[in-house]
Length: 138
Image (cartoon, rainbow, N blue to C red; front, side, top):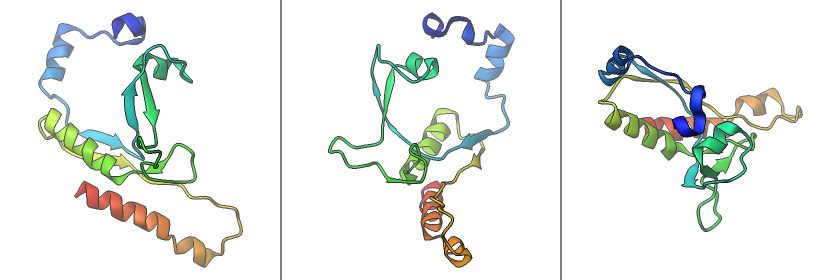
């Protein structure tokens, strides 16, 4: 990582390193909206140095071309409830079951301004999103 990012990475004292090894944090706050399928790709042109340094490709389709989930209004946000379950399980197993608080989660929906207040409140898509994500959290 130092070869790729150099001084962009923080430097820790030996004492700070030891604190991190001891799980000295109180909880983990997780912002989770969507998931991607990731594969290694070196020397690719990415939209930013942040993504370029990671040498990875983010995909939203399975090998057969089927989307990994329904797309929300934003082009980057797909409804992938199993992604939050896998993320929570990974964190729990890797870091000795810390307390995890989901600090952000949700989806956006198209708003063309023509929907009535009743239609906006009868938000079946968002209800399905939260039901599926909460089922995977439990």
